[in-house]
Image 1 (cartoon, helix red, strand yellow):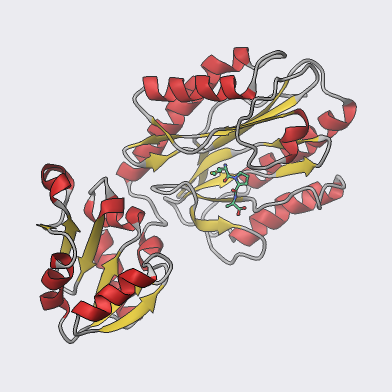
Image 2 (image 1 turned 135 degrees about the horizontal axis):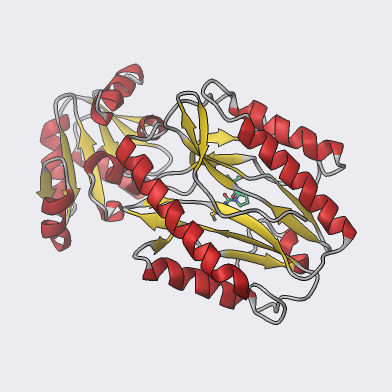
Length: 348
Ligand SMILES: CSCC[C@H](N)C(=O)N1CCC[C@H]1C(=O)N[C@@H](C)C(=O)O
């Protein structure tokens, strides 16, 4: 079944005849058009159309796997109006702006129905081509991490580590997937501590979380590295997070409930007295977005299937002291999993 066929089955279950797709990643997923932020897709029972404007005429012809209409609003809505006359048309409640909804109401003789997660649902399981792009993104990130690792030492600014990672990714032909996190010393207590001007000191743990993007697909990996000899306390925290991370990765397999994986890691950290210090979910799916389904969060009932690509990234954050996070990118396979991130983890 193609993604469009799967989507039509989901549309039917949601009670809509057509879907107006405005989430940029969903536009890209359905059409292949890489400037999804400047496009929309209309999916009907027997077709799909990409709407974008004349800046993208050539690009849309080259990339789009569905027929294109080059127009700007209001012509966009007028063209689509003929295709949706009298239909129940879903729109993406989490992405269409209020102004966008008003424009659809003004131009269409159709019942507009809010929907959630229809295209996201068909994006959960990656095709072999999607897995390949993620694999390549992670391979670039692993290589660049290996090149940059020697410069992570006392006297170097976090920003310079981030810059070296970014340059390495760009030189390798990849994009920078998201703002590079380099959180050293006490800044390690910030899970999203993007690189600052702080100068790394002897005895610091330094958390580095970064990813590449290849053909629109992301990688995601975190390593916490030691500079000099961190305190006994920090090493204890590091080893607790390592134990939680390795146990959760080992439990990744088809049929596993993501809430159970989160509970497994959380339980280990709790036994080390770090339950309160684990301030976020265990992980998330990765693809055209850095954060997508399935969610490996507390209580989640999502179930892993072969072809899903997820992160496993427990952490412990101690305000005023520092923090640790270890993250691997993991492909769910028919009989278990494959860890895509290969950069070595330190043993402290
Ligand atoms: C800004 S992208 C951050 C990528 C990173 N690997 C990541 O996903 N992180 C860093 C710490 C927490 C985790 C995160 O943001 N998780 C989300 C899904 C959550 O809500 O827990």
